[in-house]
Amino acid sequence: MIKPYYKSEDRAFTLLHGDCFELLKQFKFHFDMIFADPPYFLSNGGISVQAGKIVSVNKGEWDEGGTAESIEAFNREWIALCREKLKDNGTIWVSGTYHNIFSVAKNLTEQGFKILNVVTWAKTNPPPNISCRYFTHSTEFIIWARKCPKKPHYFNYELMKHLNDDKQMTDVWRLPAIAQWEKSCGKHPTQKPLSLLVRIILASTTLNGWVLDPFSGSATTGIAANLVGRRFLGIEKEKEFAVMSKLRKQEIEDYDTLVSYRQRIKDLKNMCELEATNIACEDYLCDDLPF
Image (cartoon, one colour):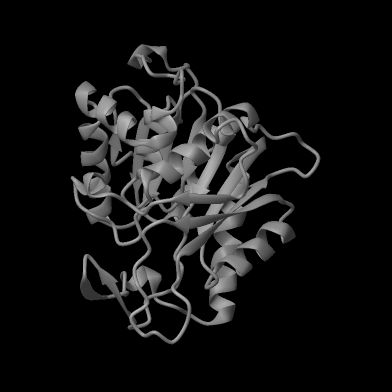
């Protein structure tokens, strides 16, 4: 039986430490939504700018580029494993750049997913292009797809419209990269902003829904899920980031911190009535992970 690295007292946040390729095969459970931020294979010795300083773009061995064939095989395998863990009416969101997103889209389609949207995340504060040889990279792409082409998926259309000044929300989202307050427990090199994950989770899940992240990193997905009353299972291979994830969950167990986070995230602040604002630990539904 799998032993979680960390499981919160409210049972809404569970973290496994290990390789998702191995761990996903060891349990049976079906999730309402999956968010995956797989390696972009960008660690090639390049440089960028952060806080006015030139820094390396290398993230770690896990992000080093391989051959086109090895990247294709990598995406094929993790997508297949995740598909088995998704409910028939569930959806998956996968983030990426041009380095990996075309391979991801190809494999999703080949494995029977129906692509619903390709959201363009237009960063309002991208790092500058210091080479001055091409346009500044300021976007990432997020594929949204459902498991079964003919099985209806959940979409909170009215809420998304409400958050967009009562106009239909488009597939271009102008949101900032992570803020300084999101780094209070440390920073993951590819950390996504809470504003992005909150919108994704609110759009495609209902209260108490289960969210899986197979490449959990610093557990932004889990923090966002808990902020809006959803439950989370994350899998993280690197011990450093598993520790960081636990600290982040413990941080929002303080009520004042929880309220502060919700006030700082635009979509939550603009909602007239937030689902799950006052949910207590015992209010979570009884269905639970098998470990």
